[in-house]
Image (tube, rainbow, N blue to C red; front, side, top):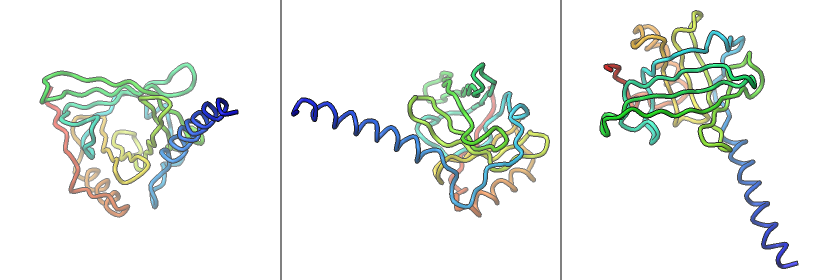
Length: 180
């Protein structure tokens, strides 16, 4: 009986921990809504990161891009690439994204380190799928993306205003250089 408890309790706690990580890390921040009538096929392809909140995986990086492509299993391959200007080298991270509800709602979860998933929510996009505002599950993650290395001021301001209304501290945005 003691041996069973020694095994069962850690296994049960591990399963609960994984379930907790999976369930609480893929939501949409309060007040935000994922884009409805989302066209996943139009979203595929290469995006340039225009601005982001800095976090450890993208620390000291410029020339950051994200390329999305469809996988055979219906999920989306995520290929993030950027230049670490401190270490003077390119870094790449490949992950997978899948829709939380269905592919017509831009609420996804993404993983670069399974079984840990994080929220990836497109909360604003232009009609031509050239500029997008993406947030994570909370107010710590935000990206402004463009199909080009720049973004028109009108979209930049639109995305900043929307983020501010949701409670994001947009003064902390890192504006990404694209010079390579």
